[in-house]
Image 1 (cartoon, rainbow, N blue to C red):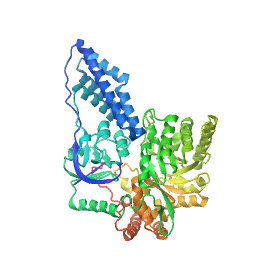
Image 2: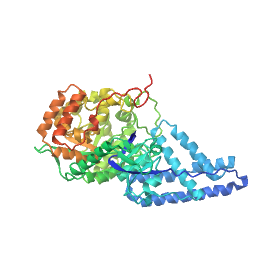
Image 3: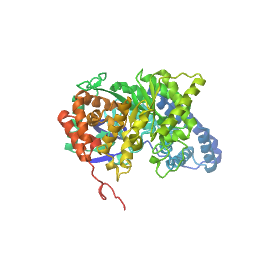
Image 4: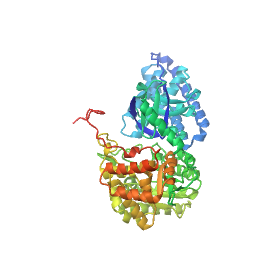
Length: 597
């Protein structure tokens, strides 16, 4: 048995047989041509590029139901195929080197991909995959190759690939592909966007999956934890089968019914909402019984060149609002910086997670900020919308953001653009300074939303991406429930609701504790809603409140873990233990990699 760890890009757990898909990398011939053959070779390229462009247009037409982002991805590939500069580079190289056109296309694409891969910008690095996909499409045309189509799959499989091309992702038989594991990719890669829209569990960025896995191997894909278990032993396989059986029996997608309220047995009712990153996800959240969108991460609109204009933002936000059909949508203003870098954004920082990011970025660029706020305001004419400011550290930042919001409203009025007069603006609580001044922030906020991912990181001084210390990023640290409780109490004292939109909200094993702390709203990955609702409807608020009091009095992570696990085991024996309340085993040098000193 071997465990491969990567990036969670699509939630869900699947057990099945692997199908390894080798990349379509044809042998590209290289041979010299006479200078007089240059026009004919160039004509071959123009014809192949035109045919590739038509193929992309057909793909877009056949994929019209996928949504705006998927169409934008195909448009980006089409623009690349027809880009005059791309054509010029190939022509110039052909006329200087006199090699066959297939090799010239390969060389130009290789050099461009290499430049992109070397970029410090995560978005640009991901675009190297698109360059490879587009060039391969043209080269296949030049060589007369028709690649194997995943549309022809006739049995259920877990796809394992080094990289899945855009064409493969769009044309594959989605009924047969139960999960995807891939060596390359990230959550912002085009493949990830497509796969999430299809609702397929996936783990990306595995590096060695294709070398490790053979077609026919048994795999467990845990899209929630970002893990792939290759050839699981009997105990592990039995454990995961029991987990899936428990989900179907007691914690299945539609148990309880999706339209039933999230209400405890003694009448305490809370709201369960969904987190989304791209507009295309909004259509699917109804499937899981979401009562609205609790967090729309607007920054993903800005991670593609040319997708940040006011009109493009307005269309994206409006699509989400309309898709929710009257259910509320909370749009977080751009949370760029740190590990999310916009194209063209080159600001070297020694510690970007503590630097120029989120609301700090927006307040430094007030016109940019107002453009986003106007787009959000205009979308509020389509249905209920709330605005949320990320990474607020003190009241001065909140006041400045609210002032710019008022300026954006005046500009909308001046242009005759409709927006809701009742639109609310709230504060995201994810910095200890915001927790400790929550009573002050509550005076100027319509709601709070606690971002536990960053709150844990900043409270405990832990870089979650650093494997040497990530074990310390524990929601069971006694400081974390105390910070959450302090925030909720400050909100309630002012009479405003308190939500939680971090990863913790989607953990059913943490639901009772959060209920007991007084949380009003949980916002999570949509697929997690049925399990969290099952816990809420199966317990009483009073026992949750007692659990919270015990946790708040605890003095260590292990004591908190024992209290939460014991409470769940007594009332929900079929509930999976929380991965978020895992052990705190310190990594050792020589165990899981060398830690040079």
